[in-house]
Image: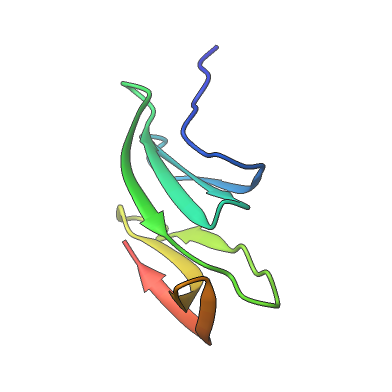
Length: 88
């Protein structure tokens, strides 16, 4: 059993990559962490504010190591726009 810790608030969405090498976790702390499951290391933290609709979607490409996620654009705690999609 492995515990992955990095987020500072509740994790509300997780997604496992197709090859089971990576796990993406989205948190109420407005970030997405991508973990390497072999090492347990968070290899990337993505700033991903969600805005008033609070969408928390994550989806891996079915055959490549590509993650799509919903996001907004934030400036000094104020969300500037919604409806964006990020790609990692």
